[in-house]
Each structure stands twice: as structure tokens, then as C-alpha cells.
Length: 296
Image 1 (tube, rainbow, N blue to C red):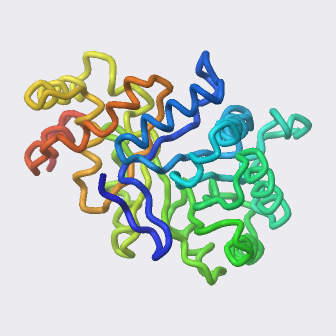
Image 2 (image 1 turned 90 degrees about the vertical axis):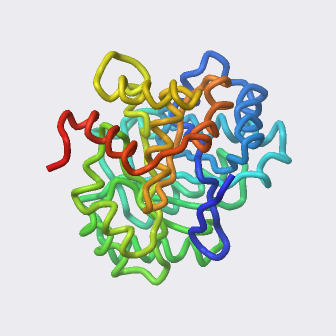
């Protein structure tokens, strides 16, 4: 599988396994999680996407149990995780209200929690999960720079940031931000026209795409986008998911889809997206079906 180079020392697999639903599986045993990781590795998918808040602050710990049971797995993977969302559940059950915290103390404490819970010594890529309207860019930037300098974090980026959020934070940092993980899918395609992707393309930065299957909506239903996906899927011997992901992979921005499922058969089929031929006319046919109209 091709890889996306974010820094001289860090590359991600072209498709990433997202673990936000890890706790929702009926089987959360270390052996079952190990089976999911190995199903990814068999396809060349080496990057695992986490966040402190996933699973009510439990998903990182589930991954850590798998690493503890099978220590050799860690060296085969890149670990992405996120911080700054404080929700009144889990270890933050006493919080009075859901909020964002990009203070230095919170970011550093979150990183230490994540390292301990995942049984790892280094986070390959740390993302600020959501833009914080109370962010002190100088403080946040210094915290991120310090974590990279300490070796606890290999590289840093953001998630769900608009260009002005990005430039504000980057202006206060020495370390380059290396990605923005945003919602991108066939049906959630505003990023292609609102400047989000263009901003990153201008800087040669690959976006990561969360919810690339529209939260599962692209996989079911008799909607126009689904029918268009089915037509391509039938012609190429794959399923809707493979075509929807191939649609993202075909874009010159170098989008890195983050795929989330607990089903081993679906995990094993992630790389089917690489088999799909996606020419420009097919890309636009899908785009127009999703938008309900031809382009102007």
C-alpha cells in the first residue's frame, strides 16, 4: 500500500484504521482487537487513529491492553491520537459542562494519560481535536512544541480546524502542523469548495478524512448517491464502501481516509478501494449524484 509522508520521519498508510467505535463491539478482548490490527497490517494499513475521548475515554485503554498482550504489534503501527475535548464522562465525570481545553496543563496531562493507557512511549501524531474559542495560541503552541522536543510526540496537527484556526496556532509555533483531520465524504463534500482542502493543497499538506462513508449512510439506502456508487461497484466487482473511498483517494490533495468498523470482514476489505479505477468523469458523476444536480 502507498504511504503518505507527513514529515521526514513520519509516514501514514494511505488508509487509516479509526478506532472511535472500539468499545462498541461485543468483544473488546485484547485478542479480538489484535485480530483487527493484524487484519489491517495484512493489507499494509499500519496507522491506527485514536482520541482520548473515544469510548468515553476508554478506547485508548482497550488498545493498550492489546499492545500489552502482543507487544510486538506496537513497532508495526503508527499511533494517532487527539486531545482537548472535555466531556462529563469517564475520568472527567465531574466536569460541569462539555468544553474544550487547550491549556498547556491539560494537553500535557492528556498526553501522559494517552501514553499510559495505550502502553506506549511515544505518540506518532497528536492532533488538537476541536478548535477552542478560548485558545491562547501562544500557550497551546508552546505546549505542542514542548511535547515534540521532549520526544513524547513525534509530530502534531489539528482536527476540524478552519484555515484561520490553523494560521493562528501555527503562527505561535516552531513545529509545523502536518495535517488537518476533517469530515470529508461523497455526501459531506463542502471541503472541496469552501477552501478547507485548497488551503492544505496550497501548503502541500495531506488532509485526513473522518467519516469517509458519511457515518455509514453511504452504505445503506436507496438514495441517488447509493445508486451511483452501486453502478460503479457492480462494474468493478467491489462494494459501495470501496468506491466511496476510492473517490476520496483519487483527489490530488492526497486525502487519507480514516475507516471505522468493528467487523473483521469489512476491515479485511478496506484495501479494495485501491482496486477501483476512478477517472474524472466517474468522479464527477458520483459528485453530481450526491449533490442532486450537475455542476454549474
